[in-house]
Length: 200
Image 1 (cartoon, one colour):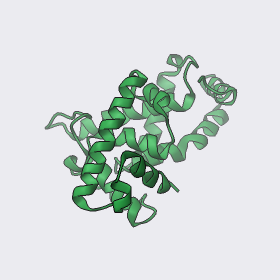
Image 2 (cartoon, one colour):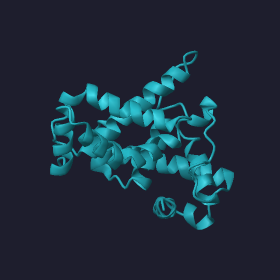
Image 3 (cartoon, helix red, strand yellow):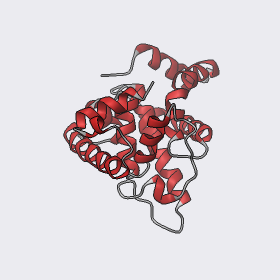
Image 4 (tube, one colour):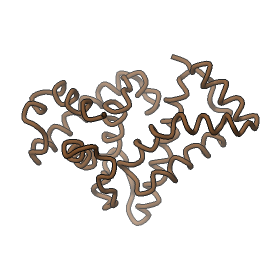
């Protein structure tokens, strides 16, 4: 699905120097981006800013074939990985292997809405960053396989495979930590229903 007329109009106006249009886009997507970064970075505000700066630099790359939202999250994902690589100068960062927990980044539970949400966040941070990001966008930003495929720049079939692996990995982490209700760990579907209920 392509970008909405409203998003495209704002983006074009912003590219042409309309600062008010830029502020409107920033306001529209700030909370979503903040939530995306807050579970992975110590300075989510700065990461949101860097995502919008990167949007300006890459202004000619968006052709409107995808939604602006998935385009923004694609940039956000790249900005996240760039940031995490700078934190691991002495060691190689691999989003498919490295987890936020491995990096020793102090994030805390400031975005947690309750104890269940905090425990889920802690479990997600045990996963490789790529799996954590995938599940958070799926559970809390309500992105389906097609949208996730745009963000991760792979085919929808590959995303479905990755989702299956990520769900299994999360269930394993949560089962070991006994950090989720037993009913939620019965199946991938039960875990997804429980996780989505925590999005608030």
